Image (cartoon, rainbow, N blue to C red; front, side):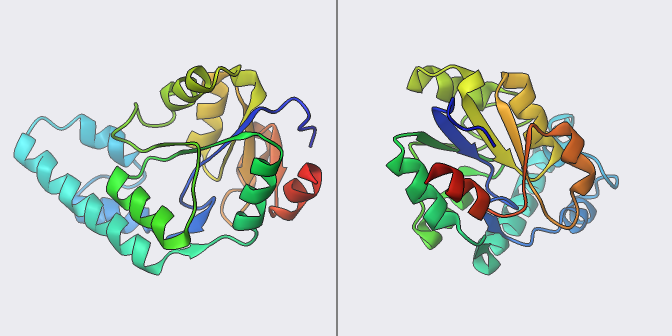
Length: 194
């Protein structure tokens, strides 16, 4: 991985920095949503405000339970330290709500230069979060790397003209061809930053 050009590294949260064991199929079932639909996008199409409030409550309950059982991915603290020692900006861009994001960061004592959850910008795969970070940091998006584990993460990077990095798990090997870079563990990136 050639990282000499990088000025900022931004991360997804669930499945990338932490494993919160969120079961999106169960969440869709509890919401009464069709299998496989993107949850936030499907929710935005609903017209009944009371129904939407109830849906938000169900989503929040799932996400809050996720914080309780979440575990940190191997190498994350060491990686963040390595990134910061190189003087690179660090960001977090997640589709989680801000309260759950804050609880997760506090649980694992993680800090970033900028954190955007779904209330702060248009949800991924819209590039707004990365574009706002780039503008604030006065860096070009092509000098940013966005690391995530899901198709929306890769699309977000592409939509922002940033580099994408797929953090591999047992479910996402089919996305390898769509990513600029692929990581099986954070050790390789730590070595590149050393």
